[in-house]
Length: 507
Ligand code: UN1
Image 1 (cartoon, rainbow, N blue to C red):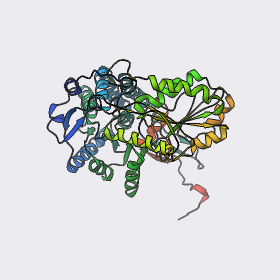
Image 2 (image 1 turned 30 degrees about the vertical axis):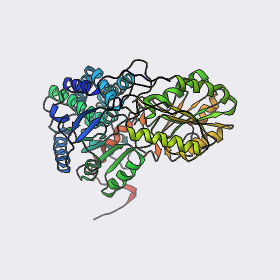
Image 3 (image 1 turned 120 degrees about the vertical axis):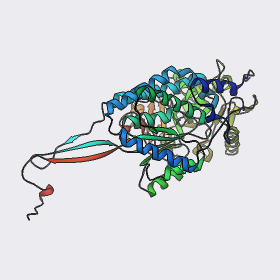
Image 4 (image 1 turned 60 degrees about the vertical axis):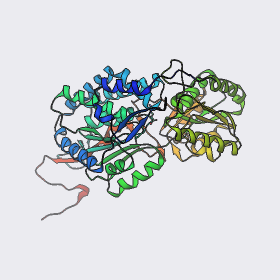
């Protein structure tokens, strides 16, 4: 139960990294917005908010860049992303360390986040030779019908604090090979990692040569900056990651001007443990997906449904894992749970635990941990009598609600009976149960896994979810289609003009 006590300066370390990554000092000093490290509570930098005029200028520059970039052959655009991936690889340790300082992730998870960026770059390079459309049978003689995919324009990217760089890269790497330009509004809690990534992108651009200025840029700020991006007529697509409340504000504004929204919002992810589950594997899967990233992934496991026959076998082991996991400075070897993002995040966790107690829950762990001026807490395991209100809402913190069930159909119904629909999993060695869970009448989420937890997805699959999660899909599979506009072309190579549907119109 002891937290690490050795805390070294986050501010000095951040300054060293920013310098090494080539981020001009004037970008992170002298501004009005303070950047606080959740690791130590120190102020690491003062960044400048963009004015709405500066946001508009960035969008106009991006639009001008798009007009040039769309003419560059896609595989050549892929070459820029390949160079960017090389820059990320070379800077992996530094960028990972900066993610740790700014978000509080443990080092291996921060490195994993940068690896996710490298992976999507590799994916996007291959994709740059695979942006294909279909050729479709036509009903008319001497005709050909096909679809073509064209660059779309400026993509606005609004990202959240918890994956401050990877989620941007899922969007940006695809957008760039698709021939688009990007304007990025990072979370106001994590501007430093965004500035660092922009610097690495600029390095790749310098090596590539002739990249139009403004192809990708960062605008820092709060709600007004996001709104300026969302409302601008030169932005045909906004990809926004964050809370359901944010998505509720962004979605209708985009709809108002018929722009596209790609929303990746809240999750309230569950796992079901059936009697045949391998409990060693289940324990590890549950521990990582519930406690990892201090419970601050969209995909974090928040609800665990355990069949009554295995409840007493699993719960003591889970309690032991919760009691022994090392909470503390995420830079220290052995730490598995770092701080929450800020004091507000910690307060939300403590409020949810109080609500859980009031709703009949038995809370194990969950105490705030005093360590420097950081925002630390022990992860909480909460045995609940049922799926009460607090369980149905997403609290972005390391709280796992555990509920006993008897029948699998009942467990699947409970797992689906929440407003959110991002990720889910089942632990079972019964093929029928596994198949049922991923079938049409199984999990209603965008991600449904078997014998792994709901978090930690690879970039090759489409990432996103249903219901209040927003419906968007990012990263792999055919997610690239969201960043392009589709045209259907019908070509007549004959000398007559037969009309479709047998219509005659003789003049
Ligand atoms: C997020 O929390 O917004 O699947 C993204 C995962 C990570 C991405 C999470 N690859 O947990």
